[in-house]
Amino acid sequence: MIGLSTAAEVRAAEDVLLARTREGVLMQRAATGLATVCLRLLGRAHGTRVTALAGAGNNGGDALFAGAHLAARGARVTAVLLDPDRAHPAGLAALRRAGGRVTGPEGPDGLDRADLVLDGVVGTGGRGGLRPPAARLAGRAAAGPGMTVAVDVPSGVDADTGAVAGEAFAALHTVTFGAVKPGLVVGDGRGCAGTVHLVDIGLGPHLAAPRAHQLTDADVAAHLQPPEPGDDKYSRGVVGVVAGSAVYPGAAVLCTGAALRTRPGLVRYAGTAGDGVRAAWPEAIVTDGRPADAGRVQAWVAGPGMGTDDDARGALAEVLATDLPVVVDADALTMAAREPDLVRGRGAPTVLTPHDREFERFGVPVGTDRIGAARRLAADLGAVVLLKGDATVVAGPGGTAFVNATGTSELATAGTGDVLAGILGALLATGTPPAQTAAAAAHLHGRTGQLAAARGPLVASDLVRHLPRAVGLVRGSATGSLRDSGA
Ligand SMILES: NC(=O)C1=CN([C@@H]2O[C@H](COP(=O)(O)OP(=O)(O)OC[C@H]3O[C@@H](n4cnc5c(N)ncnc54)[C@H](O)[C@@H]3O)[C@@H](O)[C@H]2O)[C@@H](O)CC1
Ligand SMILES: [K+]
Image (cartoon, rainbow, N blue to C red):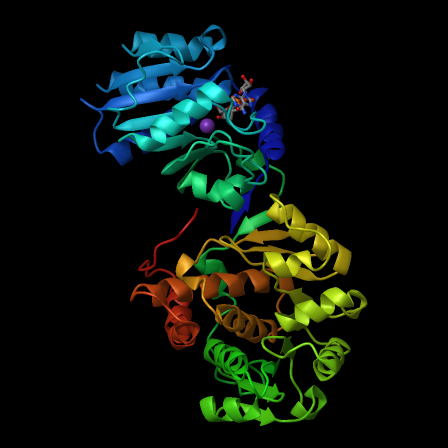
């Protein structure tokens, strides 16, 4: 698991360490790590042109010291000081000693010929979007030929939420210190950060236990264990699906198929799309009656394509009245938003899976702090909230959160949510903790999307077909044949 630490958590750990180390040691660790990553990305230093944008705080200090390292190895470094009178004195002196050139915000910045642009305008001390001179330089950097590398956080991005209020630096890479900040992997910040590289500056033992995480393949593999010799179809977790309708059987077919393909134990289907499900998945046990007629299950998935009429409402109320985990998706979210007490009173885990518009039906728009929004709704309803998006966020009612690191924009197509609901039901039926289980489902769904998209545009049923291979790849997470998107 990759811990995500807020700016305040990082600062608190830094304060402890600063008191125990010689002055400047931490910044040297950060700047050396930054220069090392830059050298690796550039392939060589000698003869390259580097522009370092340096603000007045410690973030600018990091950029100046890293610029000095690169200059000492033969790079032609120009430091652009946003606020020349307040530039980090030791960093500036080091850069000058190493032969770097220095200019002001309006000076010859070299951005139109740079091989590398370092963004050290502002880091965790930043507030709001970039101010005019920095915004103009960030725009020139984005339009220029240089590889853009953000120092700690892309300037203009809120390190905790990923919110961008105005202009921000668009980085191809971000070299971050001590811990990955949530704003690098969620919201608009994710798009500004590019590939995230973590540099260890020794904060680990002093960091508070993070309340937000990213799962890795290895973490998710624990949710996808193969059956053991003593297992039978019941012991692997029986999933119940309440989805689809006679007119729209597709959602039921996708959801049932995804559950079967994730963990092929037993899937029971109850609803009015039984004929379609029977035709597509002879492995499923189908009833045309109520959920109670389906037989025993260990978790329910309710919602995809089921409609919102009285019968649908009755079926939803029936599964929510059980003491089993329930996934509330799609039409079930619409009904739960009308009657949140159906969810609030539950003792067993409930996982809600809204996208932004469905989320808004619960009364508050998502806004720019996606982790915060998911946490608030989760606490209000006493449920797990899986907020779908470019980087899906999962929050538990106690505040624990996960940000998904897998996926592809090819997943933005009809029916992929029905597949996620089926995956989630299959994983929840094993009784693992619901928030992490929901995060594992999002991770697997994203991996499956990446696998399917490798062949070109995908449709939701491609995901169902690719699920067994994705499960296999995540289980044997040493294969490394899938690329991470995000950190
Ligand atoms: N505290 C430490 O020991 C360490 C700090 N490190 C670096 O220090 C950074 C934090 O440094 P600081 O607390 O000095 O703060 P920053 O350097 O992040 O920002 C402070 C400066 O940015 C300006 N600023 C704020 N918002 C702005 C905006 N929207 N547009 C333009 N300028 C803006 C402020 O006026 C101030 O001059 C980290 O991100 C990291 O890069 C690292 O060197 C590791 C060690
Ligand atoms: K920065």
